[in-house]
Image (cartoon, rainbow, N blue to C red):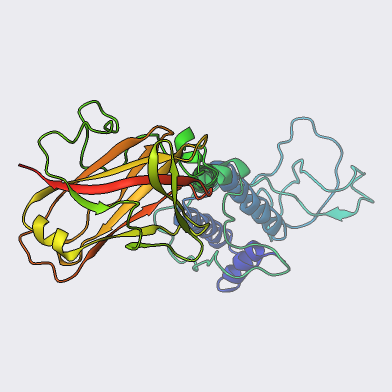
Length: 379
């Protein structure tokens, strides 16, 4: 017994089930309970609601047939109407009435009246709409739990198209997040692999030193090293180093410094070691005292070893008077003057200073010939 049938039979047991008017009120109450259940579930489609109403109508037809008496089969009567149970009419055959039997709808074959078996009448029950008020009708709970797997509540709409429609926003959000994540990962790998870098950024090799003076505060008028004698005019030069006195030169263990003489005169050939160590030239304390508070110009007269142009770097340490910053020069095979200037503070030097020269900035073991180092004060 399904839940609909059980609910209707329970309601009939609470009153006089033999009373047709009472049964009709119970049937109307069943339809009213169905309507309430449908209204409480707005997700139910029209098709499902119609199926529910037809199911109740079929069940009422089955129950109502039990209250009609069995009658013998009769011969065919072409004009006899079938017995129906209408909203406002009683069944054609009621218990205790002795009336001629009209043509009826039976559930067996047509036989003679004398030997025909007795069959039940199957009433035709129309759609009964619930009244506004149903006096004396017992309440019918259509939400009672189902028995034997039959559902008593109206099933929700299982239309897959509606389900897919409701899930569409979640699907769109998931696809959008996935697409954004893929784009982000792609950009990350593109940045890591240098797709957006310029050719200059991708070139991580050490930069080639240009054959010009780097970080030099003094620039000759012609943009290059001065020729020997060009800086002599109107200057009072103070000697800092000459090959005649190499006692004030210091060379580290992996560097070399030796005095050589050729047709160009005497010079000190210096060669820095593989570590890039420089050769130091002393600047006496007396020389620094003359330069304190003044603008001085230093002049290094040098050339590269024959057939091997080089780049030299120059650093200074003048103690309390500061330094000169790092200078770098491209030195050719011709003897030239390499100048730089320093503005000394107005202080008394407490000790001597040094000028350190690296003969090969590229650490390839090239040598430089130093003819003289001198300094003068700007007038």
